[in-house]
Length: 67
Image (cartoon, rainbow, N blue to C red):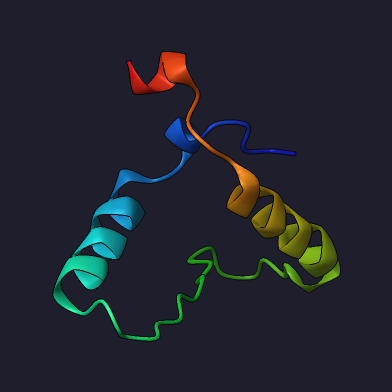
């Protein structure tokens, strides 16, 4: 697992998700990743990336992180 803590993720993503949640609670949304580095092919790593996303969905803040 690459991301081991929710604190290692991007604050921008959290704030955008909060906006959607609070202003449009019934909305169905889809987020997409765009690699801005030209010439980089991530397709060979797609299975590993999907696993990392599944692992990320299981993360919770620890008591120490919340404090």
